[in-house]
Image (tube, rainbow, N blue to C red; front, side, top):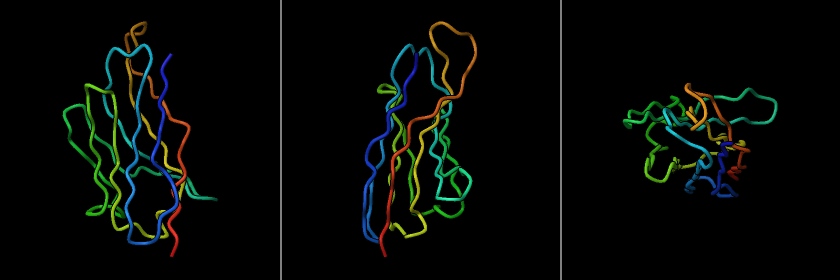
Length: 121
């Protein structure tokens, strides 16, 4: 079994910063791409940022220049540094990863449970 556990969400004023972390644990053989998605009330879940195993990154236009995704392959952990936060960044943030377990020969996609980020104006 594999688990993704997020941490670091909370309430912050506009212009502030938060750092999200997501640690993968369990019967992991290899992790390919990791990423962060977010879902605001009444809206679909959208990609915020993604990072490959080789640290190539991709960002949503709305967060470019403000958010930075990084990963520590030794710790099976992905981070999202969020700066200059805006009220429209308020959402539940979900960690996502493509993982090969020790018992399977192909990647499966896993989700974390989500962490709330609230930005007050």
